[in-house]
Amino acid sequence: DTFNISVTENLDVNKFLCDDSTIAEWNSQTLPKDELSVQNGILVSSATRWPLIIDPQGQAAQWLKHREVDNFPYFGTTSISEPRLRDQLKYAMQEGKTLLIEGVEEELDPMLDPVLEKNLFKQGKTYYVKLGDEDAEFD
Image (cartoon, rainbow, N blue to C red):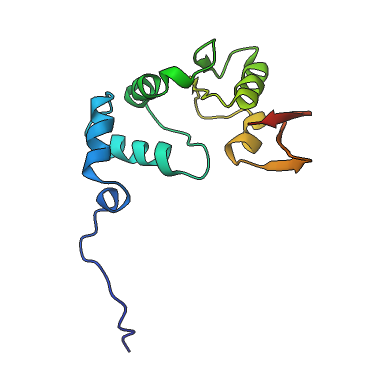
């Protein structure tokens, strides 16, 4: 039996999720034109959670640094091995800043799980996220 469901043959998911002018804008911001880079751009721009980007050549990081230069915290980017990572993350969330964490290898600090999953909760009019053993304000 057939169900008469419409199907688009040879669907290009990148073209379905993003238009050429947006990709051209990303390219002007140093994002390469290859398919994986465009997919990273789609994730950064459209994901409901914060993306974890696999970027062995550093191209996405370079693009994000260019794209978010005005929205980084005063200390810029950080690394997964930074001893003050929790404080930096807390500051960025409270101030609504973009935090780029570089140097992530195969294991993530479990402290980041609620942040990456956007496990927010509301107390009064303020949103919070559990950050280790404390609640951090989220803007």
